Image (cartoon, rainbow, N blue to C red):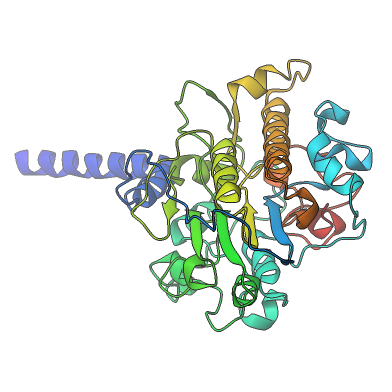
Length: 391
């Protein structure tokens, strides 16, 4: 009799444990992803390679600064008569690049998602032609997205467990083919000092990293995303979209660190967009007397939606919290691009530098803000205008 009771109790415990595991299945998947984080060191100073102390005599080729925003919607800047929250978030610094130069009004991204679009930018070739058609994603991400049904979804989610078996354990192995020639490799051959800052998302294994693909120096993160600050930081304001599985995964699994030329990872010293700009300014100063190519790949305004408290409080006229956080991220991005332009001018380089600004694709639907790509239909990951028509 006692044995029977013990068996029943054991069965009850198993059922309860199974029920709890089912309720918290997404959290367990995300926890497993977090356990793969490397050891992250404290913030440290970056020692940029210093160019000549005096500019060589004679003509030199123009510097090139390529600024790439991440998931920026067509309507996120005020250049086209729109802007976030009906123009409540002006973008004068981004707009000025166009007004002082050329606007490609019919500019299109090479793809509708991050990594293939970046592959096209780096190589000048359609990503489908070079075997890099899809955005690399870790299996835990696919499990969450393929199992979580958002309210009102037209189709049930689907995780292909069989296909997952053929995926490498390390998502960094899903890389731009190393035989492809990048713009950084071409420019380096022509005497440019090449610098990558920010998001890479084209592979993180040996041979595929930025420093293996033509960049003399690289400071950033190899993955497709990063936190802007730790979510409990006193100077950050967060907006979580609990209805969306992508957002759910990112909040739980994204780390906050950068690497310098393949060094052990360490924490940035501030809000990611500010930090990348701080280092871009230092890189410009270090290279002021030699031709340089600066690939400045911000991760703003990609999710997770995190703004500095200062930028958030400056937009008190926007009542919706999510829209206000997003607008604050755009405000911060524009201000930091202004800092880059100001540094070029301060170093006397503004007339000898080609500055290009664009986005890798359109704004994302999972942000939950309907006007990001106005007046166009569609979003990131679709080939409607809203997914590929970029500023």
